[in-house]
Length: 393
Picture 1 (cartoon, helix red, strand yellow):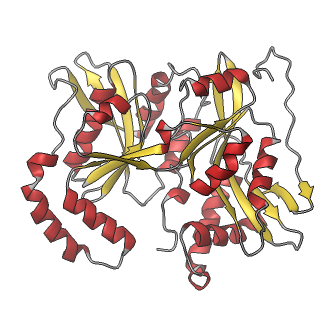
Picture 2: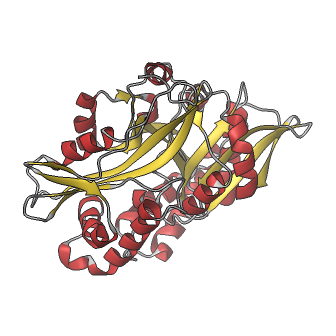
Picture 3: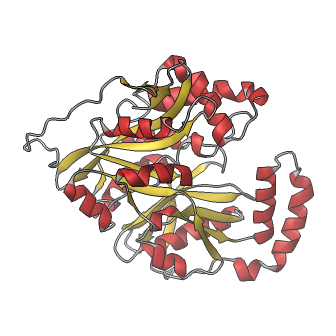
């Protein structure tokens, strides 16, 4: 298969609207499916018991409507799929968001794969593979995910997905260890009072401040400085910084600001903040976006730089999160700033979710193998509320 551009003559084939097998039917998500899908999502990914779902179902269903069924919310209409078993019950769901990439001047249609789930009460192991095969038969030039759990990983690897091992890792930089522990305890048991935990955490962290405070490691404060920016400025400058990737997003007018507006709705880790690093002449060297609030653990959404300035951009991010009073910061790793992360103290790595790409186009597969792809962050699904928010509170 060749790259799809105006002069290749390759005609894209639309996915069948309904795919039926002896195990059930796969079709596009419809509005009447939303409540059943929301209930399944809350049961599988929020571990909610059936009798506690009512409060959260409405909010989850409305959010799914916005990102999967509302064309104005995401570039192009969503292609989420449901599997209906022979008895007419919901067997599974696959969240899919459309995006555009470019490679060597050609525009590519991409499927960003999000939640993949099956109802074990009605499914006998066929829903997951059936949903993935259905999306593979569509109009997409590449399929990608940055949040696959180990079950989804087992489904996808035999279907010729290429794994990006570095991007599968998450990193944590601890600033205030007792405050991190307090935030994690509150996340697990929200009913516990901050007034009980936080004073003890502050007292302990006061003694460890010098050990955990992030130093300026990669840049001179006389030559490089950080400045806050807003979403509009971030949307204007990010495309320039990703232009050195061979396989990179192709955001049309207005798409990136709309995507950032949706990302700002995420609530679990605090408000969304934007910042950039600049040289003494005012030239931007890098930018970042993260969720954070005092006392919480900041969550990196996107960090991008160019050339030798990844370290300076990481420094700016760390300084801002520390100055804000965050207990620490977590993020997804990238191969381009991995060497700089290794130079920080008190950084820990863990498996955070499978990042994989599938494409039958040889040039795309080669770019993925060489790591020359912009993926994760805004070109994933961790920016959605489905990745972290509790819709029932």
